[in-house]
Amino acid sequence: MPLGRPERGRHLRGADEIIAGIDKAQGHFGLILESAGGASLGAAISRIEAKGTIVIFGNSSGEPTSFSFRDFAEHPNARIQSFSYFTSEAEERFAPDLALLVSLVGDGSLKPHLVEESWRDLAKLGPELRDRRLPGKAVFRID
Image 1 (cartoon, rainbow, N blue to C red):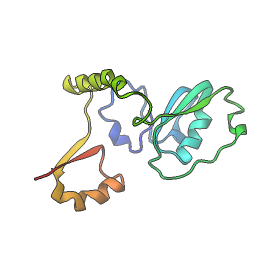
Image 2: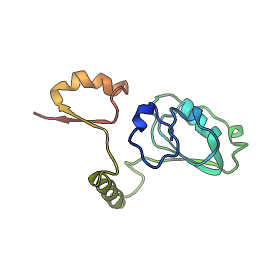
Image 3: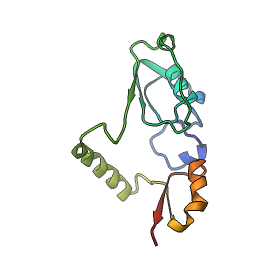
Image 4: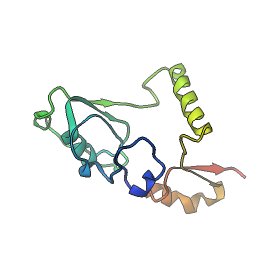
């Protein structure tokens, strides 16, 4: 499982291996979930197996990705599938998935990385969020 920073993988369960970046991955994979874009998406194409799927759901790097048909020559019938959680399914289809996530957080199997601060600290934490120095998500209290 590639992560931007290895220390973020401390609490992951079920991963056989944790690496910092797909460029360090060995072998080919049937499914790759990709949210960095740019060079990372390009590297994902080289790591997908024949008939595999790369699901893209973000572009946190802000970089464009260039690739050509020839990049898929060694990965026949592989595909790239976009996923937008805002428009991919009807809202009622999300209920079971959200219920599962809530139950995993509730029983301690999934530990979300949340920072809770006053909205008055937005000026301090905003740059940390923007520059990806703050792991996880931030929740700002209006107080």
